[in-house]
Length: 72
Image 1 (tube, one colour):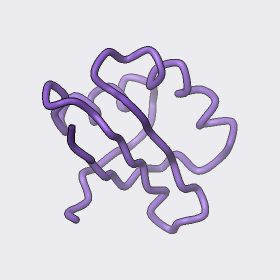
Image 2 (tube, one colour):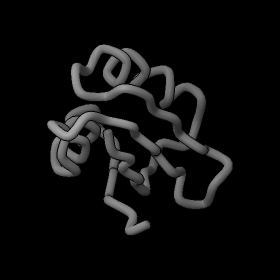
Image 3 (cartoon, helix red, strand yellow):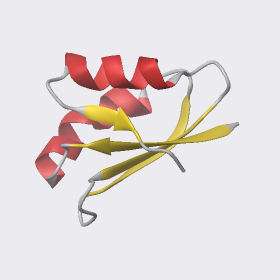
Image 4 (cartoon, one colour):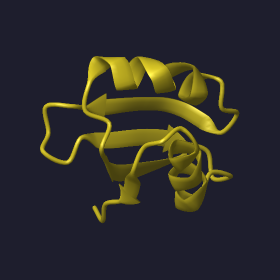
């Protein structure tokens, strides 16, 4: 298992709800959260080793949102 952290432009509960099923139904995402109170709207994903940063960036981009890996 690994933890991946991203900066996003997901900044409302409505946006989170839009992506909820995308994250919940993904085979490689075990748990996730988005902190819309943080200036970077941080997305934290616990995933198995099959998931790569680029997978998440592309997945979120397909739904019209920006996402970039944060070094931790």
